[in-house]
Length: 200
Image 1: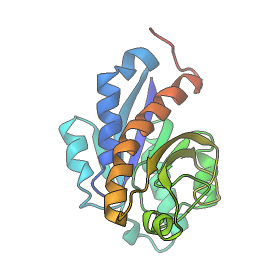
Image 2: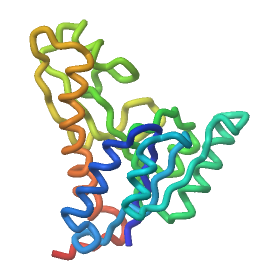
Image 3: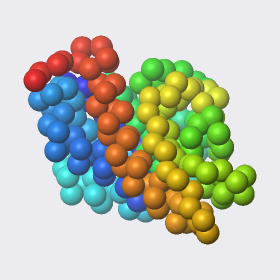
């Protein structure tokens, strides 16, 4: 079985979209894969309740309990590795990861970013796109490397920027696309992971 561990910091809407897609499309049968755990750095992350409602294991590794980013990442990796993951998925996980952590999961660590990378890495992507006069925005699913918001692109969705758009309105439209492309990118990647099955 290809175990998927999802990391969140908040409401976990992308996590929920992935879990629902896995159920709807029967990833267990088609890809020999399942979401086995949701881990958050915040005990008050709303997505934890959804994960529990789906009988998915949850855990909190509070970054504030650690004196350094390296110590936090080591504890986080221990929590992840307990679930023997084939894939680690960042879904609104608001921590910058150390190079050692990224290297540990090289090739099996994914993120989604709310811009058409390589444009607008980092924060405030929607406002920056509007201020730059862009006609389009979007979202990008990519493999994580030690360079922030870089790495091989797996899938993108394009969303038009409308006259009078605010950052919040644009973010809402981009988020609906994120919920579509993130599960799709994961499903496409699963058969390429070592030992993945192709049950039809």
